[in-house]
Image: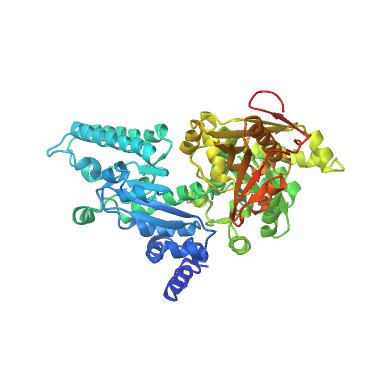
Length: 625
């Protein structure tokens, strides 16, 4: 479908009054749009009632977003509406009066704080500083004004940490030429550039000291040629950033919101011919494909290097290609200019089956949902087929010129994360270890024998400050074994570690084939003579090995031994966790109340089943259980 057709269909939905009913499909249409058509789509979507969308589509995550700043931000809400729709999210905006950001963030009773937003956007522009600069001015005046403003913003960030429960989004301030051009000597212009960059560096470092803060760097957007300011709008409307810059900013906020709601993609699925290299492997042979030599070959090599860079940060790489597997292995192993090799991929699927079928099997094999995949293919036919059969898969449209492949892949920040952890960097190796486990399984007549010989060892221990980022990431990325679907930011996890009534536990696991790392978390708390399990999470990498039963069994015995009368656990249904709906009943808990999508279960601790015999559990006390 062309962008023109997508825009026409979106308008037809709006005119017929069906835009709310078709909101998930509308997101797919918005995904095809750019420029003015995307702006128009945002204005259509911004008119919709978020409450009606949420009632019509309860499975879609809703995100309350507070919007404040120094200048007028009128174009930002429509831009956010478009970006949230294309990511399958419902935007609940809470705009505030322009220029009121200090009050909005400092006062716990402000409209912004009362809305308890998941995201707060405090949009900074150059006038935050230059409104404080005298006339005439010198670079030192700008330095002092910028230092004062940044110090104020640092205090606002600290106050937000104390009063807020969401994520505060700040941004660096681009420097328009019209300020530098007011200085007639180049030495002063250089001094202004130094002062401005020092201020932006301090802004970027706020996130290092405040876990609830994210700072978006606008310099890369401006470097792409996006105009910073329109002098007429800045003077007459106090809109100090252009609509184009706010639209690009909204795209980055959309990526952040997707990550905060557990919708970050995990696996990059790549075609080969025309995507990772030029030519057709089956026709041209290993020696004839284009990679590394010539203009096109250099472009394909540059793309492979970017793919390898993503893989090194925890993005799973996989191949789905219509080719002979032996020839693919030979190309990856023997071609002298290849940046990617067979060890970089968690799976290589090369056959002549339909690609959408192979993607379904790949998802099952990896234990991931297809909507955690990003699919890249130079064939428009294959892309449209995958879009139709797997609507949740993000599909990247490639231009015929491979020089544009990198831009197309990186445009949407599909794999953006708050922080890359050591577990992320080891992810590919751990998924490859899983292939060895599956091969090992083939040698056993029963799963019981397999598990006994696998040598599973589990360590359960209190969450530490060093674990906070990974535990937060588990709550954001884990969807299938996530008993409540609650999302926690690193700051929320850190607060649990300092709460004397809380019992946040990290679950680590390994076996004869290697270390899995931190794969789960149990978030419990004491409430009088009860122990309440607020959430229980486990990575899909370690399903079906009784690790969860082992941890729960220890928790029950710990509750009994520390004087608890019972353990309560809550299950809240989400679109992805239905497979664990019976987790508590299956482990000796009885329902409390009527049940439904949110159900509470109770274990009286009188009859605790023995722990799984095939697991060696290391307890917080340091002794095997």
